[in-house]
Length: 340
Image 1 (cartoon, rainbow, N blue to C red):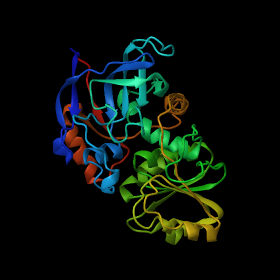
Image 2: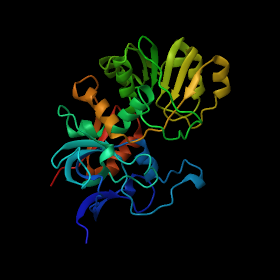
Image 3: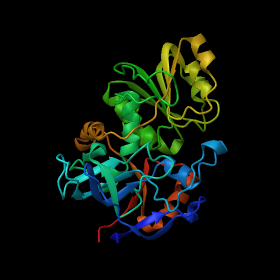
Image 4: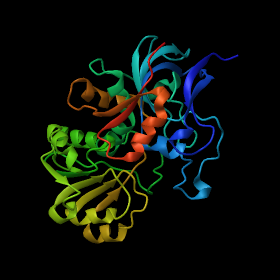
């Protein structure tokens, strides 16, 4: 019989109230896996989508439920055990990871739990200078920002377009970040600044002080001013929000510029982009331990930082999801799983 642990599981799709904190079997690991004792978990939009059964998708795209599911991808913790083929990690190492994404996009990667199985190839040593909560808030958002702006890091087929996504040089360029206050957005701002760009941050007014602190050169409160009315001749717009009328950002770009869409579903401006000489591109973030370690060095030396919006105990994951659904998140929401 398997050893047991506490986990947050789904037995039915629905609202935050369906998240159930209960006993669950502790995962078993294979030869190339690591068992991590989770200290903190980062909440990401796919967690909310899966909990809801991806109801925004056409019925034929929705997951076939195989309950009980343990959702979540982003963890920070301590190595509890290693498989026989693992050489880069040892018991007691502090580590962080985005677990099995997008492979387990529709089934859950098991992060909302006391223990999680992680492939060693998806794991990185946690920077010693940051705590588990900051580290847990990083993986998906940091890898998304890195793979859009610095290096895709893989040659897997791109589900959003027929050609690979290609980052563009940022040094000396003007970069607009829409949704700059969110989990991905606030890291996009910092990475673009690190690369030498002039950064225009677009977010709600409550984020202005933070954006200035993170290095933004200009701030636009979208609740008062439409970015497309005041920005011209930008080199790159990266939209971390998605939704209706993403095409509006084409008019702020110079010919030869680029529009990167973190969530491209619904974009309807490809013909207009071709007419304006603008490249439109997107990519799907993928787990990558070595890349997370490389980007993590910027967290370790303070070049960039993860802003934590709020913290909740793992047992109160339903409250954390309710908070996430209210919007207006500054940085990341984190669950804390205190070791027994």
